[in-house]
Amino acid sequence: MKRESVDLKSIDITIHKDVDTTVTYKTPAEIAFEKRQLQNQARIFERLARKAAVSHREKVEKFNQQMSELTEFNDIPKVSWTK
Image (cartoon, rainbow, N blue to C red; front, side, top):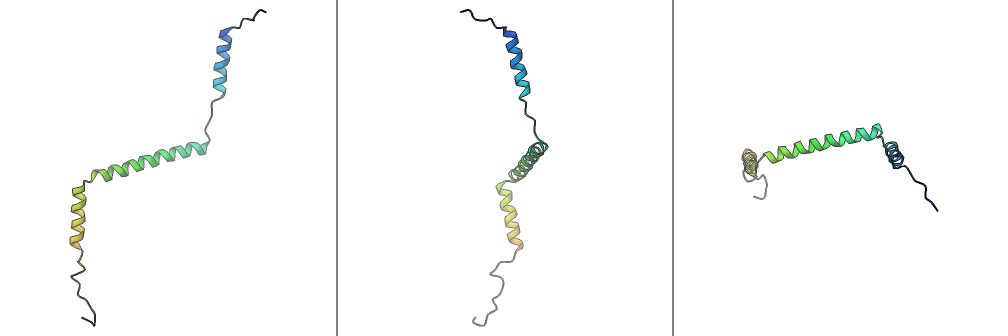
């Protein structure tokens, strides 16, 4: 039995043609979804960058300033008939 010789160039061309036909296209909804995901990631990154920009010392100073502006609960006199 003699095998038939096959032209390798023709096989290579058919492989390339098959690859091109399997290209998948995204629907407009999928494109919009991916665009929205990228926007959300950018927004989250910006928010984290802003939080990381403030040091612990600055946070404590801000908290202390807010607490100094508030009246302490011990400063308010009790209004009660028992004492």
